[in-house]
Image (tube, rainbow over all chains, first blue to last red; front, side):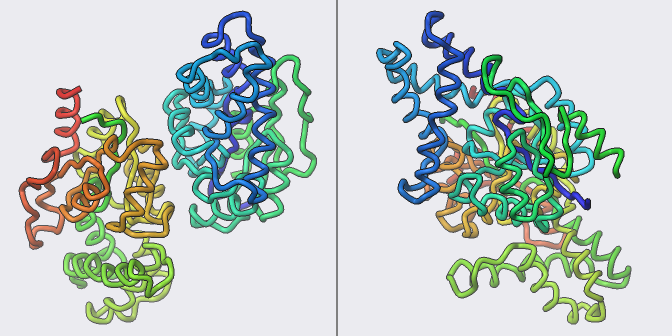
Length: 233
Length: 233
């Protein structure tokens, strides 16, 4: 492999969305709400709307706006339909302040010594900037679906990332904890690294596969990825 | 002013293009070439091509490509028409490795403690990423004309920066050493700060105005800008 830059999925790969959203739901909606359940349902709920954008049935809509619409649909079912507008707006910002996994900052810091590192996320740019400042994520560039007007796994996102980085797709390594994201990246010619994040969906969530046999690399953390790339350099 | 984020012109404002391009021209073309003259002519030469892109007479063309075309036109007049393709390609990368002004890293580091900071440059994304890594510029985001398919001073660039940052234009402070860039930013509702860089065009270049009376702030360095914003906070 001739990897010249790394791009990262962020939700679940670099940051722990389930814990962070659960914590903010409990803080903002009160201790009686099912925080873990709301986090899981919320994460599940934005996919259908995102796919409507992908199919062209909705105009481009930022992830913040998709999150808000999904939240508004979900709150009554969680006994929190009385939450006011300010509370809902604040809760949407939970996704801006997710904490990194324990290995993320150390791994990214080592990885970027040798190659540029960038996000490649469905999160909007301002969300990703807030998250990086919150968690100390040392990105060289914030690349987002928003820049391309297409959500992953649309080809435009992977193609666009390589183009903006000035590289051939095969010189870009996509790092993600989701096999579908990596499969789409591979179909556009990118190299891929799978990160196993067993706690991504929370303690009660479905366990992700331990490995992605189709990926170029399989690791359990971003520090392990830094080790692997250092060894192969 | 209610400034929530700062965006920066880079060539001349944050980095010293005249010294850097002169140095690389002498290194790559030999000591007999008029390095300062080539730097000045090169910087002047890409404007007409950029304006052809702005008028729609040329399709979108990255700054790297505009730099290369301008260089190819200029080299024979500087007695360097024999330079081979690899030398020319390497010289174009001079713009990726420009050094920051002495106050830039310290000023940006202080400024970003309180608000996100981003580039807003006509340089392409990969150029800006290389430059940041070369000089240690701590950007929270790399915003570029390339993301919008329009070069400054087109309105789309300033509008797009505010949109991607999730802010109203009046919450964004544009920082530049060029009054035309600031005038365009103001016309789109951004706040503006003028940085006086007397050496921007080199020792023999035309001196820039000492101040921009129309700007919200006038400073002589990015550390002075950090002082001003800290005092007003």
